[in-house]
Every structure is written in C-alpha cells, then in structure tokens.
Image 1 (spheres, rainbow, N blue to C red):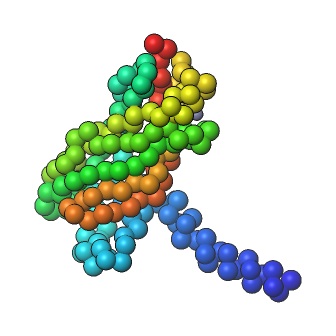
Image 2: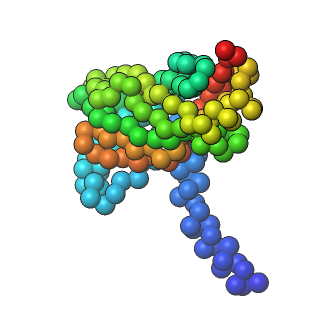
Image 3: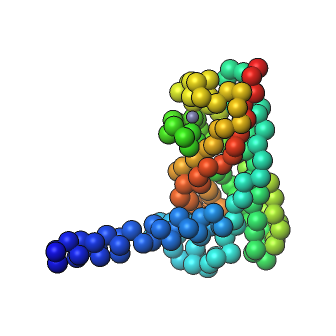
Length: 177
Ligand SMILES: [Zn+2]
C-alpha cells in the first residue's frame, strides 16, 4: 500500500505542470512557451508579455486537389515596442482521427505586431495525400474538421519559442467541389 501511495504522489508531481499547461493554453498560448536554456535569459526579460495567439477564422483556398486551407490567428502584443514574428513552423493533425493532415506555413511572415496592438497571422495548411484521404473519407461536405496544431515553433525577434499543441482549431467546412 505504502509503495503504491508513493508512486501515486510521484506521478502527481510529474504530471501537474502538464495539467497547468493544458488549463492555461486556451487563454493564452504564450503561457506555454518552453524556452531552451540558451534563450532563458532573453525570455525572462520578455516575461509574460510574449504575444498571444487566438484563432479567428478559416478560408478554404483550394477545395479540390491539392487541398489547401488558410487559418487566421490574431496575434496580440502587450509590449511597448513593435515585435516581429520572423517565421512560424508547425504541423496539422485531424483532431478526431489523429491523421497527419499536412505542413503549415506562414503566408505573411515576417509579420510586425505593433506595440500594444494586434495583427493577423495567416497560416496555410497544404494537405498531404494522407490528409486528403482523411478529408474525403470523413469530412467533405460537413463542417466537422478540427485541427490539432503541433510542434509550433515561432521565431519572435530571433528567439525560437516552442508552444505546446493548439488543440481543436475549427470547425472547418470543406465543401463538395
Ligand atoms: Zn479526420
């Protein structure tokens, strides 16, 4: 019994930061940044004033083959000077089926986010063959596609910042062509 209790306590200690992160990310993605050691000093200077990301809308760029979708994020900055987002890298997965949908690129980077203001970051998802199959099988004709955005790496002012998963972006409707 005692051994089981110790294991239980250890797992709580290990898991709790993840839970905190999951609760926090819906409010502000910036709360999840996980800097590498080399960027810690600079990150600390930025503190909680890192830009936050909020999903705004989507547009189907090409509903036929190859399939592509644009997703727009509002980037808000509380900093007193302009911030430049140099590059954004991430991958998109189907929330319901876990399928790799495709790589995502920023259409309008570098993007300057004005001081204490916001700007719209346009991300383009180019669907992989696997992703197109998933859409054809489960989602075409319905507004039921939710994206899980993973492996987010954003270069902000030369700082490489990683974000945890941005889950359930959508729903996205892929029309029948
Ligand atoms: Zn799917």
